[in-house]
Length: 286
Length: 238
Image: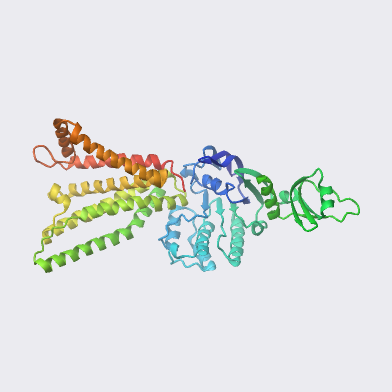
């Protein structure tokens, strides 16, 4: 089974640790949500996988092949970056032509069709595009490449709701076409929660969790009610955070749900992915 | 190999537009100066020299900019640093050779029609067009390599450290000048001077050997290109 394997990768920027002995596997044939707060280490790890920065120690393997400085993985992986790495003076159509020359599996027709769907003017230079359309241009390239592993770093930056929806549906369409892996690093957690299968949660340069969305959501729940009652229920449980509003208190708990005491006014609810992420990363900081 | 060819084509094609603009502007200015000289003096003989010098300045700027622009684009497209270096070197060699060819041909044409003497023509003569073209190619490649390395160093160490390095280098130049003026014996200065002249093709018997400057510029260029490769291998996206 193919995979991107990140083995014990460490990276420091001067005295600041960006990644601390990170090990994670992205298997072929899944859509991953790669979630983390700003500065958590997402982009650093993505850049190491894409051979843009070097790890201080550890290694990245793509289908068992070392990814660092190795052209053998060129046609296996593509990384759509948040930062603009394209030549700003080239027209969109010229960028497509060059991508076609650089990659064996770039579908020019698909790129042109997607450009039409997004109303992306292919005769405009990259620098003349708005921020949103620059993101769309990068998405079109990534979605027109049939490489096994595609990483999207903040793919919907500057996109309006319609364009974001279109991206998610196109992504699922592309996913259904073959055995491929999409890794989406994003802050729009709620939006991607329905399309991702597995979540990799990173914080402070360490992997906090790697689980399927289902498992992760089942691993926690929230209890709300009067503060005293909530505190009583939470005693001895793994509480990852609280929210309070007047006399109402909500506790976010990791672990198996216990039945509520008889006659209790407490309410148990499932946590959504965003809330779980917020509370887990808040706790990590504390 | 196909990928390398594509990368070299990319490196060359991104330089065609600025190169065309450069030559249009350069020879536009040239024509303007010539028109003014002819109108004012009635004489078509031109004194200003600068075709190759302006080409060297232009290609130096391209060398520095190439790192900034092409490096990022190549990383985006999954190229390794080894491929990036090879494609950069090859594309600069092609661009340098093309510019040298234009400058050599136009230099010869201008000499016949408006009595314009290029700087290189004055130094090395016009007798060997092929060798002059080769020589000019290696000069341009050398300038590329110096500024490509400079861009890599600035990227690596940052602005402040680069300025300090610049100050340090200026100091070294002054020190060398002082050594020649006050420390070295006249015999040693004379021997070094003679060696330098030989290295640039000016032999002791008054003849000019074009092979020596070609070798000299190749060696200097090679040193800078090797330095660039050593740095590029460890360069990360910022």
